[in-house]
Figure 1 (cartoon, rainbow, N blue to C red):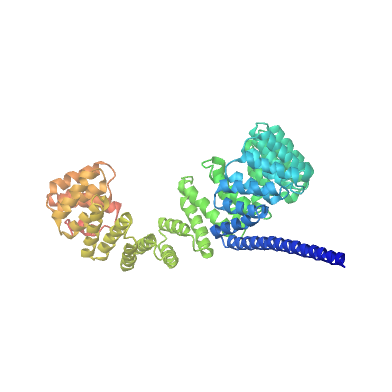
Figure 2: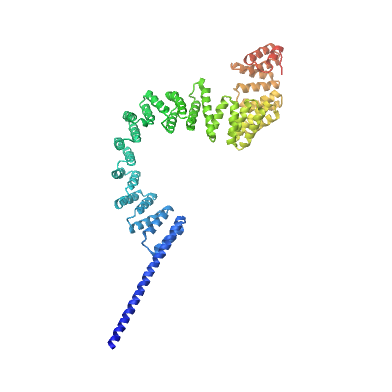
Length: 583
């Protein structure tokens, strides 16, 4: 009985000890589970903050997660992402290196490592990570292209060629590998190898005309122009749908100085509606940049017209046509007798273009300038007022519209637009000077003499050396016989500035005439007439001066000369018939 009790005692002790050990194990397992749950919580919170781009909080949460579970490669990867984004590159390198040391079988880690080292301008190390990626993880062969690009940048050309060749070995002959290898061979001054690569690409994809074009351009650029022409001609013979290559063929013929073939191919291309408009626009713009050139000067306007015929209703075609004619005028490439014709063609094209696109201010400017140059005042007014609806604060539009009303002698309308323009040109003194100059002229024509004087005074406040206003202002005062001393001061200043201009000399003489300085007026007018370029007004004024000096017969003779040049001079017939000055 005693032994049985002893056994039960030991049995109880053993059970009790086992129960205690089991309890401790459960506690350890629960503790580890808690730790992992806590680590997962911090990681999840870090991800939330990462998404919200609150990187400081995200870093704190990720680091808290690592304190609980130190060997979590995913957390190090996320930290590396943050540090790379925030340009903390040393920390980024430390984090991604740790992530890869824990798990070297994740492609994303290698890509991020390469990106970080690239950002740190350590391309050699970036290349190492691409190499490791390609060595350890199958299915990432696209990385050959990034590796090749890095080696190319590092000018490690053999390694770059090797990388692209490895890509080609895996993917087959492809455009990216070929073009990059060609680029390297050209840098190494080995054009024949580059050409060989292009030929391999053509043979691999015989139906792709793009590769033929690339090869022809490469051949031509390296002195094989004849071979390039043959290649393109063969393509056109077998692939009529590749008509756009005529643009290239034309260029090749021009390089060969076969100008007849150049023009023929270019004309065929521009007449072909299947060739995209964009290619023709690029071609025409390219040749415009080569002007002046005798052949192109004959050809380009014709091609511009053909562009519009072949692609009707296309705004790009019409705008380019207008720009071609405008450029020819600007560059002085138009025969004198055809300038108005070219301006009209530009006007017609620009006028149509603005019906489709009214937001191009430069087009409005060019259109209005040409219309003004051809004295098409009604069109200027119509287009100017239309443009002002779109650009109500453009002072220049008020200026040209006002000038057009001046051309039609609609003085009040002209004054309205010119005055409105001054309100939009308050910070542009040069433009204000033009506005006030025109306003002075218009107000004089309208008979608003006080306004005219006020406008001229504003011009001279802005620019005391404005020759045109010094001339007109003093002349108009002399006509009205008002403020003659002021007129004399202005015209004398003008003479000090420019004493060779016949118009200014005539104004000076007329002011002297009005002041009674007849001999001085006679001296100056004789100087003008001696230039052999006098106008009717000079002879008329000279006749008036001679009459005042008592030389009536000589005065009549000068008036007759004035009439012969301009029969519309005021009172000229009465002067001759009555033999006296008629005011």
